Length: 294
Image (cartoon, rainbow, N blue to C red; front, side, top):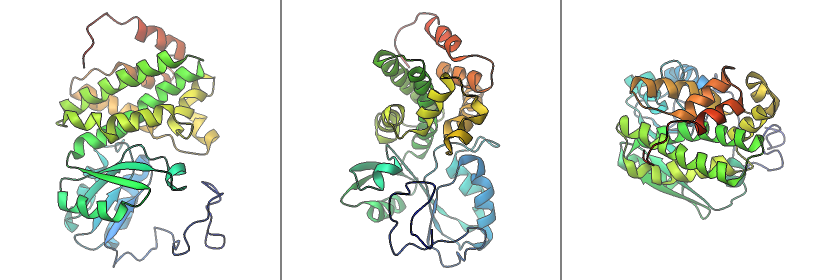
């Protein structure tokens, strides 16, 4: 990457900005860094921030791009940051929304949401991030934005499975709609605001991830439905599908709050080899009839 200013593994056709420098996080000098952007998989998130902590200054600002929860503790990733960096009193924000890197990197029009309990920090990040092709909105509902970003990947896995079985638009639309109900139901139980799930981090990202050709989670679900083993899919794709790590964690979070998530429950059963995809479809369709609600 230093030599070519291209990433050989991801978006290799794009030249990276000339002013961008490269290093290894284990040895980087971060003593003067005022803003750290975290974009590592959820399963490595705590380990990475823990290794960075001794080299960060007090009051540092952190913008998290990862969508998921920390699998070992079931904490939201902003909570991981606040716990691991408690002595530094960091300012923490999360960026979410329908923002596939492939399109952002090509300067295609994109909207995102920046969430933080520190509204002034979120507004400052909004100024930094916003450009002619990326429009950022501010949201103070950190809980809702983070859980929306985590659950949408699980629903995208389910949608990919539906696509992999050859089902059409009816099934896809039903999964997206009932997935939004699951996402909202869980968020409300955990203190989120309802309107967040109708916004960019909720409905926007859900639609984008469930329908896009760029979606890693949708692709992973499709591959599983076509017979690929869940524990080899990420290696075969050469990419992380966050929903595969997040689904069991979210199901545990929901269970602790007595929240029913039938799509998520079936995705986890498939990932753990307890069901095949067609059996899960039958089980979802045969659930007790009820009124349409959350």
